[in-house]
Length: 136
Image (cartoon, rainbow, N blue to C red; front, side, top):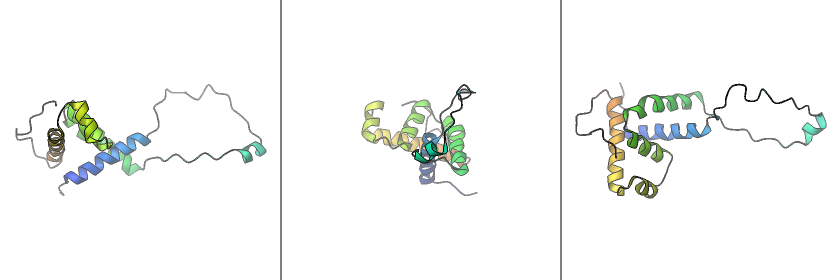
């Protein structure tokens, strides 16, 4: 079994954040069912502006998103989840320091501890106690 590195965990977290942004919004069933059909003539269709294609995530990206959301993030405390997810979406450290009320070095240490907890889970090791599961 190949050991996963912290860099690979970071890449997967960034991919999951990207896919989360690309996912279509959740709508109630039959949301568009009440609208009547609009019939356009061929001339109207020719003069219409083409809509740009909306990028959709691939199956591999959705699989990574599911793995991160359903397996990795529940391992962490709520504050650690927020920190890891916001770093995956490239929120600057300065804004995170203001939000969490910590210095950047302390916040970076907590971020690395959360990533190492995920790596420990993936490698099959239990937490040895030097990474207590506390909130920030």
